[in-house]
Length: 286
Ligand SMILES: [Zn+2]
Image (cartoon, rainbow, N blue to C red; front, top):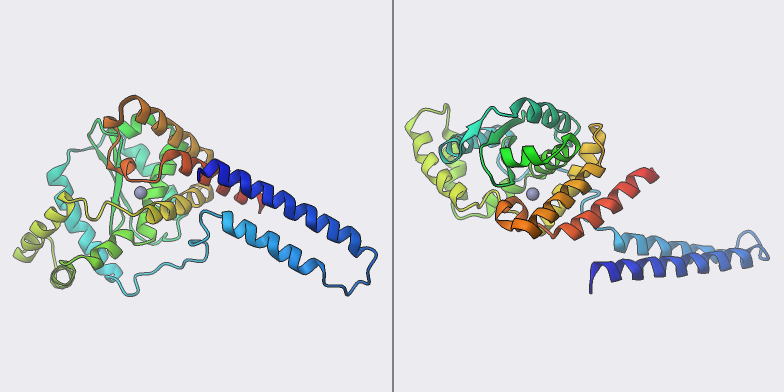
């Protein structure tokens, strides 16, 4: 069933539930005060709202490195991965000040404010962005040209969301190479030794296969949720997330080859716009 018809059904059910509550309330006026007739009707309304919430799985999530690489090892892994990124991509200082300014604001307002975040600009005609463990966030020059500050904040806060939720670390842990990489990272003391060179080969292959930068749809939803909340806390207009998705939607229709992997395996833009609207409305109610 399409999202729009689901949404219609939700509102129809909500309206019906509201009507029931109103009817029960007017009947209740004629009843003694201790009558409990209202309780089930209210509970039913609450469960409809719960059902429609696209982010219900993430609201009470708590994030830490427990059971994953320690934060120190995560930073070392990030440093090694970044070295491999510099070999594969052309990094530039063009627009870096702007990314740094917007990105650090979002990072401080995130649920992981004590991580040392590093922002990087990649020279590319692809509209793309990705993040790696240890606080590294990458944005392409094409995306920078496309986005105003609120829109840029939405992308950066989304990427920071992946780092907050340790998505890449969780993916790494499920990989066959995990034990070996965890052991080598633990033994690393600097960036120049032979251990670093060995691990560099393994990590370079991981980057090439995009294992650490591809995420499941649920992880994307979680990063959207953390992103829209984070950018709003940082003082950016969360509507920027919607207009960013709309711009991406138009580009996808015109020339989808311009969209990098960041957007190709995400939930479709229509759904992300709906979910973001839902969350903005919810933030305004509180
Ligand atoms: Zn993502």
